[in-house]
Structures are given as structure tokens and as C-alpha cells.
Image (cartoon, rainbow, N blue to C red; front, side):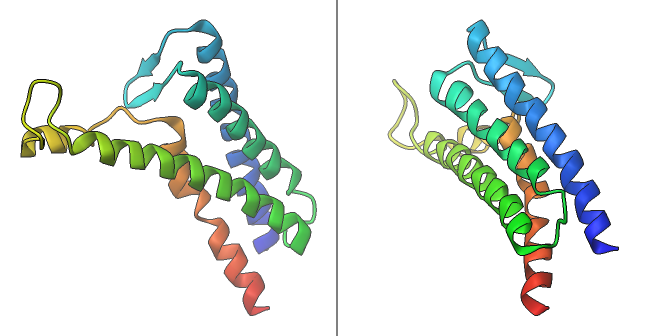
Length: 147
């Protein structure tokens, strides 16, 4: 039963991840940032281009792990995909933290409380949305560890 749930979950997550990765690449090729509601996709070559390739790889890792999901080699593919999401999301979170501390070009050295908190407001990159969903792999790894 858990294998079927894991296959369905990571199948859907793999498809969504592939869509985000392809969208990252399309926006990067277009050259203009894309923002829709609380979602923001950068056209920066590093974050959009290379990040898009990494997100596509993540989606492929998720989708390639679906056959016999709880077998250790297949589960490790899903874990590798989640680790890629964690690295990209970690860099995005680190960028937000480092941008929130300084006060700006003509401002004081340190940001005001209002400016500090406004840095953490939406829009967010697609990887930030994938982060909590990628943590589910820890449940399956823990289950495998106990078995």
C-alpha cells in the first residue's frame, strides 16, 4: 500500500517538477522575468537556465524512481531528486536572508524592521514551493531504515 501511495505521490510531484523546470528554461530563453500571483520565475541565466536544468533533472529522477518504488535503488533516485530541490531552495532562501540584512544603496548599513520583513514577502521561486513536498521522501527513507 505504501509503495502505491509513494508511486502516485512522486509521479505527480515529478510531473509538476518537470513543468516548473521547463517553464524556467522557457522564461530564461525569453529574457523577461515572469511573475504570476505568488510565483516568480527569474530569467537570470544561473537561476533560470541552470536552475531550470536542475529542476528538470529532479523531475526525471522522481519519474524514473516509480517502478518498484520501495526498492533501495529506486528510492535513492527519489532521494537524489529531493536533495537537488533542497540545494536549490537552500540557495534561494540564503539569497533572501542576505538581501534582507543590508539597508540599500543610500540607506543605513542595516535594514529597518519593515524593510527586513518585506524581503520575505511573496513572490517566491518554484523551488520554494517544491521544498515542503520534497521532504516527504524522508518518511519513506525512515520506513526503509526501520525495515
